[in-house]
Length: 205
Image (cartoon, rainbow, N blue to C red; front, side, top):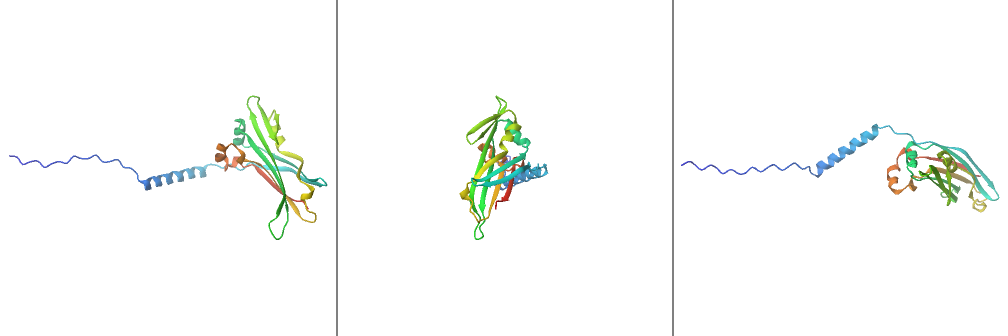
């Protein structure tokens, strides 16, 4: 009789390797690092420049008036968005402060202007809306010219300026990305191409 052969246990197939949470975390960290290197190596465009070519204040018995003109050029990204009928919003704001040595300066007046400009593909024209009124322009240059200047803009009433006190004006003009359609705000808020603004401070008295 032959001795009985030893029992052979079936060989179980090896389970595929599954990375644990720590391995997945490291791979995600490595991917982020690679993305950071790519963006760091990519050229960064400078902010689009805006120049305040006219800025003067007139004060008379009827109040305080502001004349201004802003010269700027839209970046390629902003032009592309406008050409795709994305509405753009431009905001001019003028604030008047009274000096106070014992506390932060007091704001005594605040005036804001908001323009909405949108391209209309069916008519190949640009519609500008301001204060509930709309006007159509044949070219983008005409539409931009209409929203980039103000003449005798009343920013304060006579009673808001205190006699014998020192006041100054803070003026700003910008492309307001916070008013863009919600889905676009996330993608363009920090992009240099969309950072278009100009500021000026002027002593009133």
